[in-house]
Image (tube, rainbow, N blue to C red; front, side, top):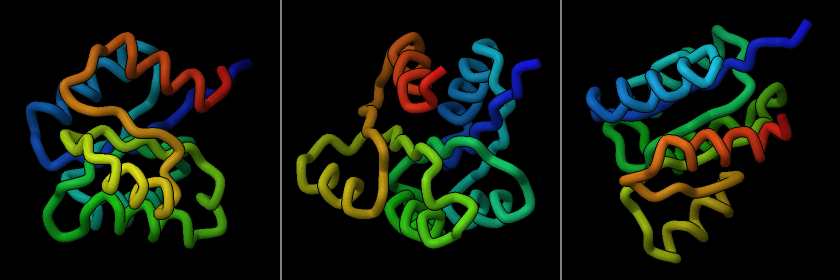
Length: 124
């Protein structure tokens, strides 16, 4: 039997968060929603998560800080982390890579591209 993959989404825009969650659920993934980095980190400590999909610009804790915090936890040291953000500058991408991001997708995005990237980083 195939394990259902759980993806944590951290996005402060409720409309984008709803759209991303709908896309992921239609593709067969279990989704845990978070409104910002702090919310995501708290929920990740209480749940078994296979992947993190995070915005960069969020209140309370931004995506780069979230990535650093997640990478510092032994259970999440190697999970795939994809940023989904409006940020497209190379300096931000480098900061993301240095923080521990696996990949970077710039908004707006095509749903099929998001799923393609997720499957690639999950190798499924």
